Image 1: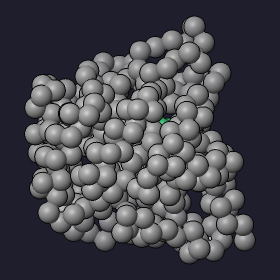
Image 2: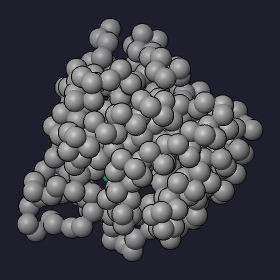
Image 3: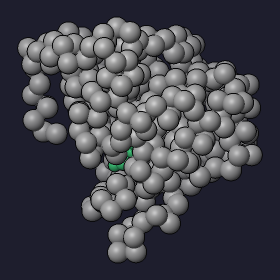
Image 4: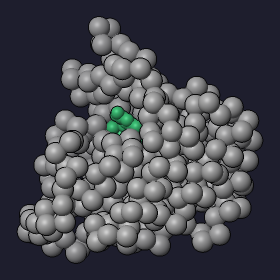
Length: 317
Ligand SMILES: Cc1cc2nc3c(=O)[nH]c(=O)nc-3n(C[C@H](O)[C@H](O)[C@H](O)COP(=O)(O)O)c2cc1C
């Protein structure tokens, strides 16, 4: 990705122009979701541009929004390498990155600088927040709060990520009492009412998802991202087994089921993510009720051509 670091304003303008020509009738793909205007509904999922190092590049590649992070209150190195493994036999990836990131203060400074230039993207930017590894679980809410207060003026929407399998105990924040406390703490300081979303695991039971939905509604969260990576590795061939979260094709069906479950129970918008490798996979997510979708593993395997394929299929010229 290093080649994108130097993507200057001229290059960006060129990419925008090229993209506008590549994507027929782009305007008709616009969506308005939780009060934000999205030029198209295909976004970059969290974890790809954790530190917002190449944020200006994503728009030119065809995405309609990008989510940076996961960002934690403290800078942290993440787990030792190797920590990212392709599983090509099943079009999957296993990762145990462990929220390697520069920390909220440094990323906030980077975003502030970028906002002061004309390189800030014209599409919505989400900021995905997590818990620092060194912070005890019972102080998790304060950790998220630190990051949110540093960054609340810099993002268009925010995500409380309580579903990564790579920070010990993090997923227990999806339990009702912990989630109730987290939502209450963050929403109490969300005075400018930035859309606040929660990102959930595909491994939750239907009952646990219903608990999350009740809290999302009572604390007036703006949306749900479904889903993160799975801890179910039954699809992984023996010789590829690794600790971490599994993404890509093996999570596709479960992610779609979770989206369908949520949208059958609430009007709260859902961003669908998990195993999208083609226009048909994207359509499956929209048919399940997703308002927007995000790509990660499919983008690793297929690159920007995947975005174009989905956009064309969404609205053939
Ligand atoms: C290498 C890697 C790193 C990831 N890092 C994050 C992260 O920091 N925060 C997060 O919320 N999700 C993270 N994810 C999860 C993705 O955003 C996405 O929810 C998941 O991979 C399912 O989508 P996919 O099948 O299209 O990859 C990561 C995924 C991968 C493969």
